[in-house]
Length: 140
Image (cartoon, rainbow, N blue to C red; front, top):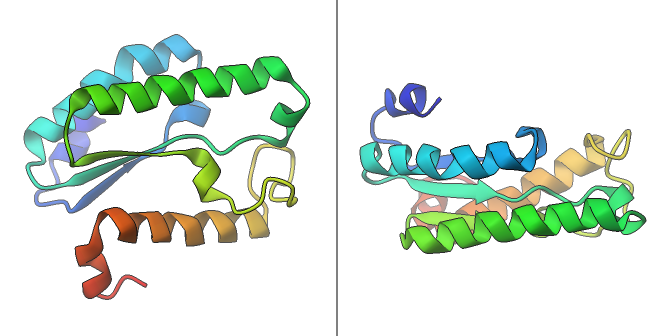
């Protein structure tokens, strides 16, 4: 996938949102670092946003699920920090939904209309925070 993305020249922004569909935790740990490094080496000016997964409602009742999400969040945050690049930014999933008590999913995992609305509004806010030149070019 990194090779396909790298065929596109002069990207300003790459958003990586893979945690929810990455399979077992080991897949994410084995593949995310090399994937991001390949992008950074080719995409000389792009900012790379790595999105942590938004919390699932079941995590408020299941300590094992909540622990797994915390573990992967810590892994991703530590990985991005260790890469020591201002162009790579980790956004915690909690920032992408406004209120965890709101009913934002159709099945406890996949967004409903409200979930998509809140996610997109908050993601735009985060993008503009880390990439201010886009706001000057009309992304509002």
